[in-house]
Length: 238
Image (tube, rainbow, N blue to C red):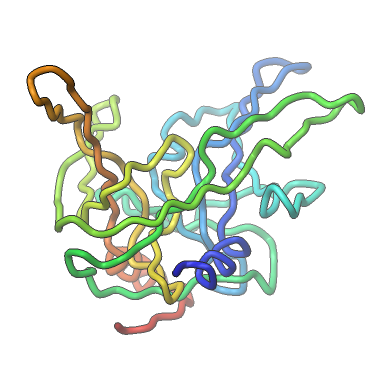
């Protein structure tokens, strides 16, 4: 059902690499989250909390559409616009002719089929040439459906509260998927993977199951930020 839209997603999403220089000879590298392009000029969307752990020694890079298209050298990610209150960032990498998603800014109905995506459980290791092996940085796609509308405030652990306004998705997103697009079977982005609900416990008296659901930020808030800063994007109505 999602075959065609996933083929598009493979070209439009990418992992956001976080570099933290610890010394002249040592740098920590990991995947902080996921971004997706919204036009052909290298402009992309992700969530603001991907960048919360930044300091003067931190930088963020585009290293290609892994695992099949690695770009060397990597490219510095530049922040263009931000809405901290709704946890959205517009960034840019110096690329042209990027494949991109169209936005659908209607809030999806309960039961609507969607797919969440991103780069969780990334494995980065040294190779025998003195570089890094990035084959373990792989895309993840999880078909799911919309459970309900939602609006909740999320504390980033440093006193900053952001509002995640959008909808609940049945299947939980994993670390590394923050900022990834939530898209439908036609390949239209209807939201951004933002957070998960607090764990709830279902029990029959002898066994217990912990349940969490993904929270997606609705695409209309992306549109608001893009319009405010006069950034080109493409939109399709349902």
